[in-house]
Image (cartoon, rainbow, N blue to C red; front, side):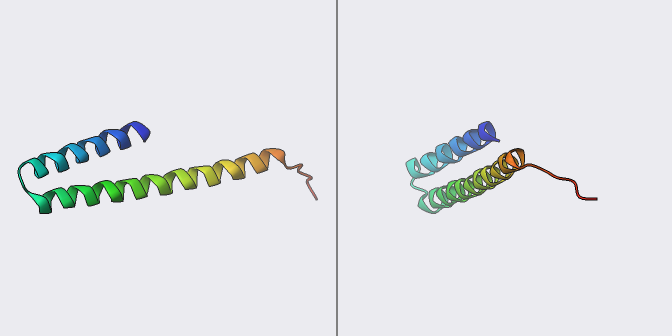
Amino acid sequence: MNIEYKEKRAALILAAEAFLKDGKIAEAKAKREEVEALDQAFDEICKEAANVAALEEKNDEMTWTIIE
């Protein structure tokens, strides 16, 4: 995911810069907004991955007793 994220982000930024160079402000803004949305989605994935990792760590630390 990290490599895909970086590649997609870089491509979007290049597109935004190209639009700016051509004076296409609305299109550049749209690409910037895509970058922001991509960043937000990536941040949410990272936070959730950290939350799951914390649960796994807690699970490893717990002593389990089977009650029958």
